[in-house]
Image (cartoon, rainbow, N blue to C red; front, side, top):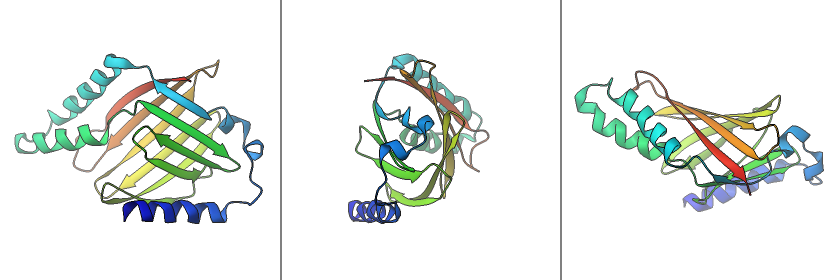
Length: 178
């Protein structure tokens, strides 16, 4: 059912895209992100993510810490690989787990379902960065995609927040272009 819904959403998004959309119709700033990216942050960035979760969880009531830690750990897994495709005004960001999310870069809100939860996602091109915002009933995450000057390294900064958290969980993951 989820795959069917996902396919319907993707097809619905593609149907409204211009029929002649080509990669060369896309903004050059967006095209710079296209490609396959492998995680190079290693144990240091994985540990920094765990430490960021723990720094937030320790501020919560004892009875809520275990559940909060479990949910945050599950929702902030660092993908080992991203594949970014840019076609015309649309961008698809896919992870090694098989998840793929299509949006435009103009801030249009797209509705999706993931792991049983509905959420909305939008992305914007801000200068030479891509900013994304994903929101569901339990909270929201903001993503900032930045390329190094030579275009070989992608850094993704993530802020995950919820009304149930005393402060956002913030972490960074770094990728090298394949």
